[in-house]
Image (cartoon, rainbow, N blue to C red; front, side, top):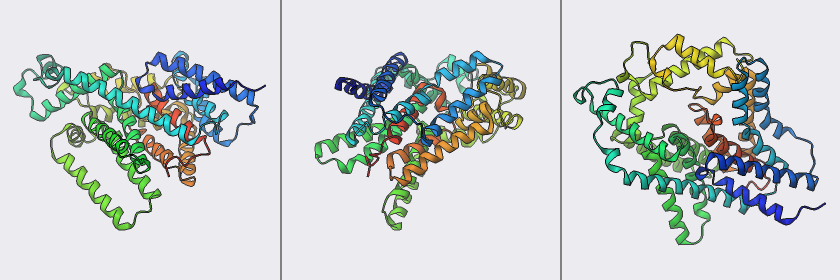
Length: 435
């Protein structure tokens, strides 16, 4: 029995809609994903495609299956079930793309990514408008409440550098609130969009479209700079450099020139006072110090808070490196470590996860879990290089680097980005969309 052509059109249309997930609410994402999944399964079943699962899809599914298995030795069963439900997209998108592999043409894949880029641009414009309308609030002198919250009594006690940090934190919190998206995830989306637009630039024939393309790149980079997403920006620079190094035909001299330009830009950025340099200098000044029970609120910053998180990550890995503690108990174990080993009051203010995707799998499902994730990364990296898929190679490098400081797969913004684009680009033989 043949599938009506309309079903194929609806499936394709919903893929475009999912591609604009940055501007969709969490509820809309769930509903659209379910409909998309059902249509994908319908097309697969009626077309009678070979049902045998090959090695590639098992490699995609294995990390999630090991998390599922870890539920059997988790004490907090409900927490584990909730986490697995939140992460179900990790296997849904790859499976549907696998069942309908080669469904998308080269142009369709490119258009889907353009839809994504446009949605990222729109959410930036939305935020810029709100920033302009609230410019006075964002740039105004710090308030008494902010002074008190940071552990000071008067403004005269606060250094100019600390004032800059407080104002930057105010700006970032404002952005997160109006967009309902953390700046790290925005930085991740922007990095992918910038690389894609840059790769497409030479292929555009009309000058007017080239101008639009260049305008989008400039807006995206400027916003990435202002939201000071350190790791996504660093990942963009490193991933772009690696992609150019492995896929370009540049001479050693040209590569050296690009390296020099890169170094000059980085040094110049760090030398002048700006949102990005403030964030970088914060970590430079903090080093590897840990917050203690006696630490004052004035000493708190994102860097030393993270140091404590990584301290507990490593401690839990050492305690149970073989099978882990189970996905249901990972947060309870972290909270216990924060309370008994760090004692700083800030760890009671929020729930802090591992802030590292590799540690998340290791602590949840042991050495086998983190190895499954690394095998997945290596497989994608190997295939993308072998088949000269620049975009997939860049995407893999980008998320692998950000995995070092964020648990991307625990939140919808990171999970959909990873699983949707990995599945779309990996399970398609027409992988020459960026040659």
